[in-house]
Image (cartoon, rainbow, N blue to C red; front, side, top):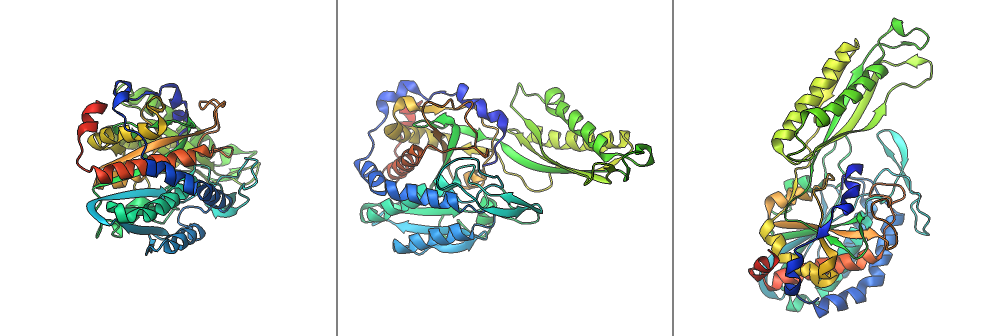
Amino acid sequence: MRLMPALLSSALLATPLFVHAQAAAPQERPEVAAAAKGVQQKVVAWRRDFHQHPELSNREQRTAAKVAEHLRALGLKPRTGIAHHGVVAIIEGGKPGPKVALRADMDALPVTEQVDVPFASRATATFRGETVGVMHACGHDAHTGILLGIADALVKMKADLPGSVMLVFQPSEEGAPDGEEGGASLMLEEGLFKDFKPDAMFGLHVFSTLQAGQIGVRQGPLMAASDKFTIKVKGRQTHGSRPWGGIDPIVAAADVIGTAQTIVSRRTDIAKLPAVVSFGAIKGGIRYNIIPDEVELVGTIRTFDEGMRQRIFTDLKNVAEHVSVANGATAEASVPDQDGNPVTVNDPALTARMIPSLKAVAGADNVIEPPLQMGAEDFSYYAKEVPSMFFFVGATAKGIDPVTAPSNHSPKFALDESALDLGLRALLQVTLDYLHSPTQGAAVADAR
């Protein structure tokens, strides 16, 4: 998940979801509770193993191999190598019924862990030409462990299962390295739904801004579109003692960064929908007394409206080029410099139907409707193809304020492992409720 710090105060705005429908929430299925209890220790062990051995996007070789190995041990026939390291398996139920897909992402981030746990990551890798620490700082290790646990549970009950379930273990959710393709879009391009088109798809994400025990979900738009940009500000190298002998791209780049802040604050109607333009990295120069030839700026744009999205692209390119020229420099602005993620949209009818299922496992008061999230998810690509629902599972331990807790993508992100149990039970309950009542509509009326 591509997160922005601005979204991390969302817990303040979270509100109980459809509280007047509490009486309509069903009870947790006994088979869900039994399955969760049976696989709990294994899910924790898997999550810790993946956490200790994280792999960057499009590099998830070990993780994919471990996933495929366990699926084969369950008697399944996983398809591997989709979108580089994706793993997909289908559980065929013993009775006719609908098709459901469940997704877990597997990749980690170029973050050096600062959490003191016995299974902390000490892994390193190369990212953008630099040696970096690697950490599951977003919680994808939890998602992978949860889906493996659900695979165990569904295989054991498949004789009585109506329909079939596709398990999607996806690489590169955080985005493919420069010059590569990956993630959900590539899985779809390589035929993920060619022979198995699900009637519904579900996914989850552990979330630092929710307290452990809580679930967050909303109908319609949930997470922003995300786009990456690259701006190269070009000057002319000179000695630091005589800046007039060249053109300083560092000063020009600083002006670009400052002026770019007005794109959202002064040119975008954020009363309509929120938007974000953030710079994530600045790279230029090598020595204290040399003004370099070039400075590279990279960052992200987050939007919910396509018109706003395109206007921000135009505005940022305009700022980069004209502010650079005003400083005597030039700019090459790739805005965006690759295809970004669309807005993640939960199918309203499907989500309304499944909210009672979430309440059944978390309790009605613990299912809340968060505000729009500026973080992004490539689950959005699946949601464009089939009716889908994506929800958040609280990851911050009770007693710790989720507003100030280390966020997803932080080197201090710490998952309360009770989220593994709640996430597994919620996703399994949703799956079974849908399979057993694919056309049931009462929950929609109850949840309104």
